Image (cartoon, rainbow over all chains, first blue to last red):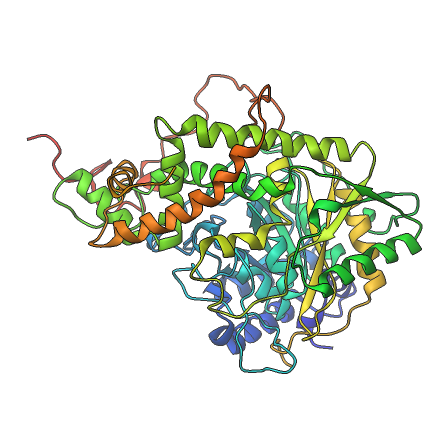
Length: 493
Length: 95
């Protein structure tokens, strides 16, 4: 077994037994990055020297008997988290060489617990996209290949495409990610790994480059459900620097993975059965429910009547908040500057040169729906529909403990597909976006393959601040599925 | 509601985005495609429904009205494209 094949749980045990060192684990991952990143483009910035120094410091701490909960574990950090002294790009030209003089709360928490950072991973620009194609630092390749077609490059999903590809290809044991409409769960499904968007307020947003503040949710991706639980426990916790951070205790998430599902009521929303959905997705869904039933769960049909309005609601709310958040990029305080005839011209030319097309589209939509005369018809209307979507979940969770749905309407698609029609790209998030609007936790767990051998995931949704049940159900599906296939492109393959 | 070219240019101006020749027409087509799709929300009955602005569900916390950070001019200016002493520098605004 190669050091890059460890799960986080397995590596923590091997480290504590002295079978391996963080220095060896970290060096192996850096070699894997050196070999595969030129092809996969998962990392924007690799901090090899810092990582090796951190690994040696970690080994010293462990030798001195002070091992944190993630002591010595090499991780990748989505380049949306500010990291002190390490360039942070949000995959946009507009941030230029921005090097934060501070560390985000989530990454501070991981460092506190002994994690080692390998570098910053790629994403869609400002996390706006579902294929990683909007990155100013180039597309990311999905490490999985269609069984009968080795030549086609598939997208890793987005926006956390670099996080998911790096973890699937074994360039990192786990990664931070963020989810505003599905940006953790969709790439996790496309790359055959696990990922959880926790409850809004569980992980601090402080120091995470803002996209849509009422929806943005940091969370982890990793290769197993339990590894996600271990990472989430470290990332979570109340932070006075984020006024929406919840003052809630952080449970032992890893322990919840072993709870089982006996006696749980699992909801199956009829509105998630889409017309034209591939048969294999429907079959996977039924298989997942059968596994849970066999483990003693009760399957219950439920209705979430406003589901079909979630995406259009999201595409008003998210651009509106984005247009406001991205007003800060003015070419004055940090990042790119383009000179102009006067100050206003400087703003306009800087923003025109610094933002990519998708970001501009969303700023335009957001500015329009917030502008005088249209605010009520669009923005206020969307906020009211958001209330109805949340109410659907509140009512459903009175009768069920968790909800199980497909994670995505298809397996990973080829690079270049769906690029011409923004709305077709937006439909990728049809199953995930509801959880962001309602603020509830949602997890992708790999559950099977399509007929071409590409990974497919199921999604488990839970009540606000009940990630424990989400982990219990996800772990039961993971265990029953017993998947063993590995992506074709991976470290030391 | 569909956007005419003049509105596209006005929104770009509000958003402080310089448009290149022909960009307004491309944006007009793309934005109208998105807005046409969003239009389906008008079919939802939202009378007597309160708007939801956030998913947090908790009230804004209050803190003591005291200075708790500051005095970090160098850190604040470290990424500035241009500076003059302890200030951000911009092109002359007032003649």
